[in-house]
Length: 633
Picture 1: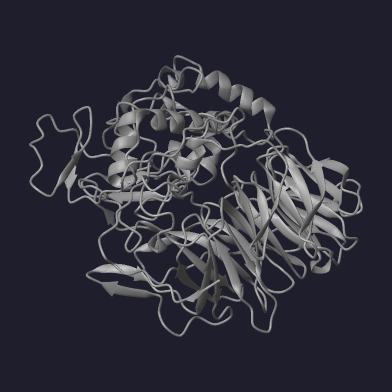
Picture 2: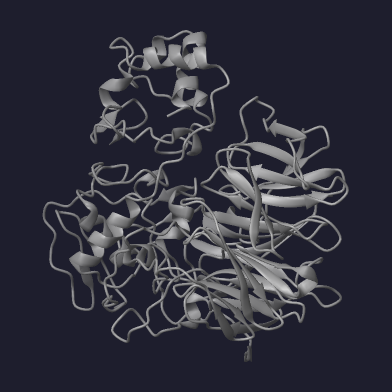
């Protein structure tokens, strides 16, 4: 790997947009663009301005018989004192055991269809435990025999795992807010707690967990928060990275690792808070100045924290080598062009290399600031000595080998790359054009999955010039049949959205109709998340009756299979906006078009709107029952 110094140089304003954003008002009469400008838009909407030709996407069209899940990252673990690796393969629902010394596949451990294995940990006895993200369980594997020893149901969506050596136990962080502790040797859970904030609301969206003495450090995925959980299960502190650029805030914590000396290292995104232009091609910014960028932060629970930007798109995983000279490996899961006719060259450094390794201070902040100014646009300068590596296939995970070099997991082809040599994995191809386009790194250096991580949404509220605050919209549960799109309902169908957002705002390559169809079809395979089992079934039933009552009128607009009538409605919150689907509602805080409701309850108090059905006439008990029902949808 050639050693290089990576700095993002502003040659042009490479520009990006997110499918979550709102579109400017429609124009009935659009004049032709002047020379040197390009006009985009269909159905009466347009964007005009200087445009970078991103080429035409021309990869072979492939639709998988069994659509692959969105990339989640972090599915690789070095075990057996550095001699082997355990690799979770969510595409094929299997775990692979690889001999790192011989660079050979030792065992293939099949799981149940749809399990979607994720994080792995090794216990003191050398057994491997893997979270089954969609299987609701943790599987325990004997890597020496290549067999599953047991399967323990834990919660709806288990995500993070940690091994507590003092208790010889496995700690599981569940997306629904549960922390479950299982004996590593087997047996019933010794503890199961559901985290709640000071306001009594469940703290959801848990991601990773680190054991630090008698307490736990738990990350939240979309908000990039770090929760400090004391031995009694209470939340004693909440920390969040503070970007050096105050116009950005931390979001989407893809991975945390224990930091040297305590605390954690977090690889996450930073998302813009200031005004975002929406009336020009690529109005959401480019890699040097885009509205979403990647960063690594060190969070010390004693109170100190610092962040530095990194050059990556979809930074889904990282790995830390051992002291005394630790090196941080991090990866970008963006897909890229492989044919000359597609957008840009095979690898464009401005988009971030798939695999990078950086030697930088991990306890104290870098000496030089990571933000520079060039022609008025912020430009990333990574600190430390940086090396890069470009493997074949989409990179989804990384680990540090015993020699300090990065071990790299890829999909399509599915393999573990050891010192540049791939060890291939068995299983039919899960290649899918829609999946690739969703994770495609545009000329602007971002992807659809940047704002819709893991096929859902980042929970961010954007400030669009001329429109105001608009929250990223959810796409889980499918979007076909919910047209028109965006909060203003100004994008009549998916081809319009793909053209105006992916091609124009994101500066992505032109897409023929067949590719647009493939992207929409894959998005429709993303399931809406289901809620936790209700704590009060009687309250849920009372809420269901209220919801469907003509007197309350909730079901007048929230009707049909997806609980939306696909129209704009003025509910007293500043104008007419699209009626959103309520499927998976509880996972999508904050709520409303401008994110004014931090909880479902707040929709009925601080920002509900006076014309939002007849809910304002309900008493507090009835509102509580209605909320209990809504949180089960």
